Image 1 (spheres, one colour):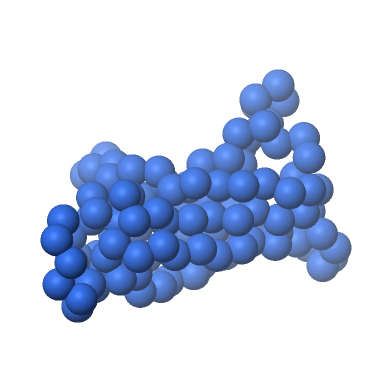
Image 2: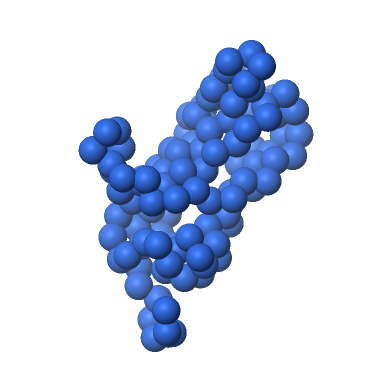
Length: 116
């Protein structure tokens, strides 16, 4: 398989942010996601046991893609700082788990001055 991949991005606190993952097999063909019943998009302060879970983004799954989203409500839980995230898929009946994407999020304070 051709994952996990890394994608680092900037996020403006309080906005919606969405990205789509198209996992591929090692030969370049689309990875079939239909047998994976649980998808997780987790955001934490650091990797491993030293990190604190901030929250989970929403994940919508198709047969060959996952759409991950940070909602404004989740964004409000993050301060202007650096975070890490993972996107995982699970097939609970086969006890299979894969990390598709991992990376860093740099949160920038929204400059509009909106009330929180």
